[in-house]
Length: 128
Image (cartoon, rainbow, N blue to C red):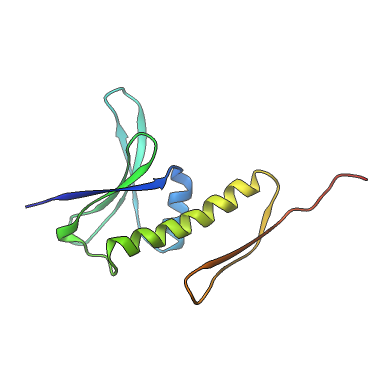
């Protein structure tokens, strides 16, 4: 018997979510969904070999993870899986939003303790 688990996330930006999954070498497929109000949006599906795929589905404002825990095939538990994605998503969000205000990433490094170091810079081009 299937029992789908819905896990809330804070992933609101599809572009940053796709970048995070790609950087973690997690293959995904885009799935266009048309709602009852005729609005369309894109969900992301992570295929599993058993056919019970993992999905990031837009619930209106955030993407939630939907999976059947009885058929979880990832190499680490769902909490660790989400933590890794959330950490990478946060880095992508910081870089993307900072670039909008003129900052550029100088260094992005994963440390031995699992944390990330991100250094951004912005040059003052105003004439004095």
